[in-house]
Length: 554
Image (cartoon, rainbow, N blue to C red; front, side):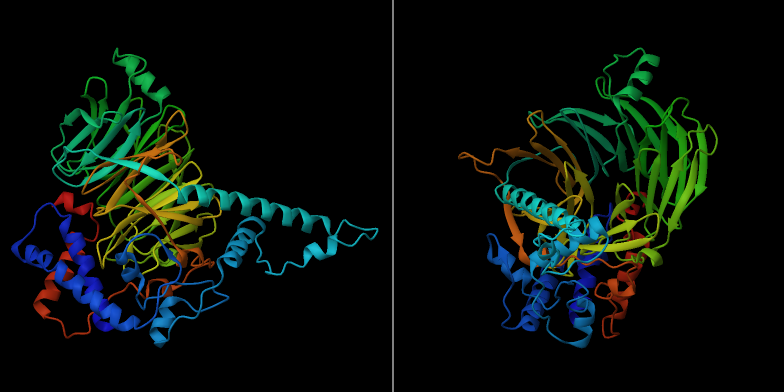
């Protein structure tokens, strides 16, 4: 396993090198070896897997079958088998996985009732007796009916997504990686490391506006709600229907763009490279920004004056999201902070909770990028591993949701839309990319969507049409619009829908995950590697690729 881990580490470093703005000759040489390293890794994985066959893979492609034939087994429920990392350390093969139906029932019972339920469910037997007192049996019957109803709803939802069809359209225009996307009405707005913000007309898949003005890579975008746009539009003598977009850049500026005229109407200088931002729709409105040095700042939407500056994190702030008066910030070192907006002209943000990487169980890893998606008292965290974390931000309890059945998978972004939790997934070993869909609030696996030669997905936005169909946009190497097609009829979709049976029963929930979470992803050299190359690789990882956002600052 030593050589496998070493190859996985090298591939992680190469993937991070590829998205840097400028490359040295040594880095270009490393990138040129990617195909060779992947081929060697595939050989080793097949040797380790032996004659074992993959469990429950449904879908097209020999590549998918090869991909799953690895020794790195997924983690299962704690009551059934040890974590995959412990299985690997002991050198044992994984036992048969827990049946998906049992795992689903346990998940639902924990989410809704807070306790685990036995598979046999003895409660219905009690209510079948027609004795005088039925008060003890009635809750069990209601619970049984609720579980059956939810199971039927989930089965129907899963069946509909197994028939899903999407038409993909490539939006061409950026000449560097797309780092951020937002959707406004029938428009998609994208920001890129090429320093531009582009506006796209979705129905025609054409470039609508090219907003040039930043001198550094664009790292983040946000769209204020219409009512806040109205106030600014009136002050600028523009139409009440005007929409504005906020863009943050490595040039230390936040710019406000009027979409109809394609011009920057206001800008503010932050004195720090802006790596994340969000709009807080409370009172007069606030812009909250995060910097490459870990600073969180609040700005008045009305005056654009700085209201607060806090040295909140030790490394670059890679994600800021708002939920009502709450603001969530995540940083490259793995820490997550929760703030409450007190709607004040001075120091509006009050820190409610801060959870370090050690508490959350993320550590500082090769990806070095945390992406957040809050939901009630939980926040979903993507952090460049094969899992999604769910953080109960009030208590610090965490749970893990498998987003890839191999430890070579990495999660770059997470998003919620229309009762769905969507996580992007990229396999370092073979370069395959996909979106995994989970139902909310139970977080049960529905299906995976992919297409031939799909690029790594670094950012995501979603909305629904008037008819209720999904429209998505994904960014990374390519900017792609996804348009959902009717599941019936003869229309052929561009995407492939597949289900990985191993992900049905790979949901692991544990209150307060330990360092074991990361054992399969901490790749350490055994000392027999070329010292010069390893030194350069580690240096590049620590300085340049600890966060892919940092590459815009070099």
